[in-house]
Image (cartoon, rainbow, N blue to C red; front, side, top):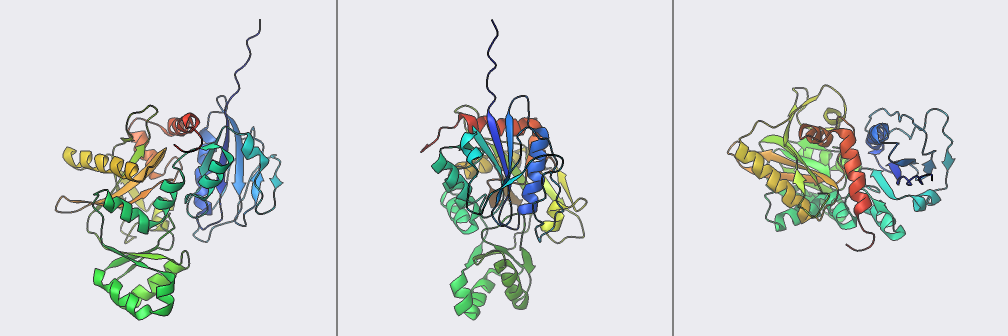
Length: 365
């Protein structure tokens, strides 16, 4: 009697997106697709172009995604080889998404990491990798992220929010208020990631220019007081059972001399940073960092994975800078490197996230 073959779970890897982090998403999806176990899962690659079209390819096709990391955001270039594409009209959702067991959204920034696609999948009753609607949206909006972290008793730095209406109608008042943070300050879009649109301002003239640069990405801008300290990052994973989330070993981001801070170029091109993992800090500091990372993960009700970024100050203090609910996800990105150093290599990390999503219920949880 022939044994019936068990059906493999069908996984849709969704990538691209309608924002300036499009290229970063392509690189992450290329890495995921290169290691996902095709003997264990059926795979459906789904690309979202910058104009909102959903592009489908055969789940059996192995292909590479090629993109130049450029802040201008290159167009979706996929797939290579013989894969057949179906380009759908803007606003239409591929029917194949209703026939998958889990979606792996390798998406960053607005319209991907901010709760939008998570809400769509919730409405469709489809399981997916990563945090839900609330955690994703709060984690994307740095103003509300900081408010939640502060309410949970976690140490954050001083900051100010520049809103669109205030900037347009009363710019001088806004500039005066923001200068109360002292110099220098870091100016960034409130709802963007991957260091897009971030700059450092050391004077009132530079501040106005920096706000305009950030506003090119987001009408709401966050201005943060500079924190002197070592930049240390910690990755967190949800547990497969009912145990609490776990944090991996922290790593320190070491920026080379040609960059003042951890900007887009330093983050996504080779040769500009080093990751020292484990971070060379006392054991007591390591435990505090890991504990705070888990507390931040739970404060936002995160699921799946997250990366939590800290500053370790000269006086031994710790300042939590931000949490990222879908961190950069190539094999050489910081979070996967931290997990590899903690004993979970990249292919195992991808599998762990899919398994977590498959075990999750649909609907309210």
